[in-house]
Length: 138
Image (cartoon, rainbow, N blue to C red):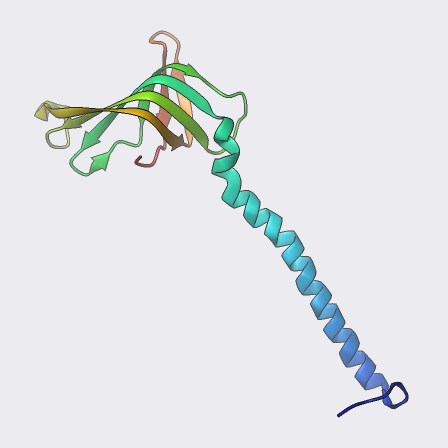
C-alpha cells in the first residue's frame, strides 16, 4: 500500500520513528563492539614488538611439550601486555622418557628461528635466565 504524506497518521509516524531508533541502536552497538572485538583478537599481534632471546630450552613429555621455556640472553620489552611474542634464535627441545626426569633423555631436537607466545615471565639474575610461562605448544 502506498501512503502519501497527508495519509500518514500518528501511529504510522510512531512505527517509523521506532524503526529508525532500532536501526540507530544496532548501528551504535556495531560501532562499539567492532573495535572491542578487534582489540581482543589483536592482543597477541600487539605484542609483536616483543622479546628476543638467543637460546631457549623446552622440555617435552609423553603428554606433550612443557608450557615453560627457559631462555638466555633475552631482550625483554618494557610494555606489560597480556601476551608476549618471543623470538628465539635457537630452541632446544629435550624429550624425556616418561613423565619424570628419572626416565632419562630420549632425544633432543634443535629448532632455529622460532616464535612463541607466552603469558608472562620471571627472571633469575643469578643464573641470567628468563623463565617464560604459559606458552602454548609451537
